[in-house]
Length: 173
Image (cartoon, rainbow, N blue to C red):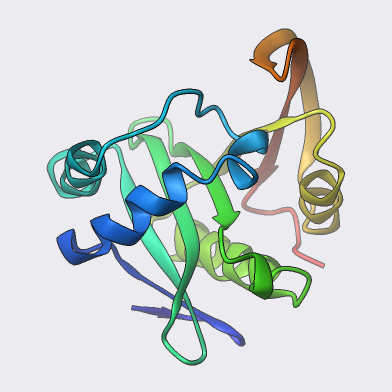
């Protein structure tokens, strides 16, 4: 388990698939994610199991100080030979947003990625109109790499994806 100042990142367990299934079907939160179709509990089970079976992916549950699951932190597309990976983070519990828990989870995850996994670069994709996420990523030193036009279709219109990255030596403010 990884400990932050406000959250814990722990390995996902099969028992978490019920809540993950509910989270993956939360249309309000997933408006900022690449999830279109309703997803089954069986899909959630296989999603959880894939974290242990795939060497290129790790899924962490974000727990608050009360050890209540509030979101997910994902390390994906791990390229050991190139020392880089993609990350994703989401706070699904709407009552836990705006309290700095996402920032603490991201700081904790980045510390693990750079100092334990020995990665050199972390990158992510974020919808161009997800201002809260963009502000957080900039605050933690992520740099704009580019914009992928019309990559996501949601609510009757296309959205651009921003690609951002952070290198190990770039300080976290």
